[in-house]
Length: 209
Ligand SMILES: NC(=O)C1=CN([C@@H]2O[C@H](COP(=O)(O)OP(=O)(O)OC[C@H]3O[C@@H](n4cnc5c(N)ncnc54)[C@H](OP(=O)(O)O)[C@@H]3O)[C@@H](O)[C@H]2O)C=CC1
Ligand SMILES: CC(=O)[C@H](N)C(=O)O
Image (cartoon, rainbow, N blue to C red):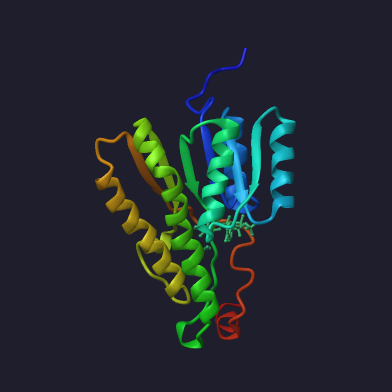
């Protein structure tokens, strides 16, 4: 007989679940009995994650979603709820990271970093928050960083984006006191993933390697 776990039957969205920490989190959550909605832009990768989860008897629903596009996020949550029921937990994991010196003006990278790491988080929280408040339960888990509390060279915009999420989380936690909805930040340590591999600031590459 299956042993019940605290996550058994919970409905959990993990954004950025097509690779890295999001993929590993989705697999671990499903192994604990959660029904996991895996969201990201690369549907083929998400389907591979779904296969991996289903092979061990878990439940996962892949949904293609760009977190910077609010309508896609709302539609992802609607599809998730119509398949699995109300969302218990949102894991805001999707993120991008470029190692760069600010003076080298990688403006497109700045914009993308803020779009995904800040606006994406707003969009995802906005799509689940009212439902969680109505149900008087829910948990928003934001993946931040060790540079969310202390800046580091070559990470100005990235670090700022993660400070934003920490600030948002502290304030939202106060706003939600007594509602039954919790907000948690997780700062993973350095983890070997593909993040940062698109960095192309040659001055930084020379500095570091
Ligand atoms: N690795 C590390 O050392 C650390 C990582 N972190 C944080 O952990 C989180 C995960 O990073 P990690 O696993 O390392 O990196 P990966 O690059 O492996 O994963 C990033 C994920 O974000 C998704 N993503 C990026 N842009 C979007 C978008 N616009 N819409 C939807 N999904 C998007 C990607 O999916 P797709 O391309 O398919 O859309 C991918 O699944 C990030 O928030 C990162 O800042 C924090 C501290 C340390
Ligand atoms: C993505 C990274 O590796 C960065 N060093 C961080 O800790 O957030």
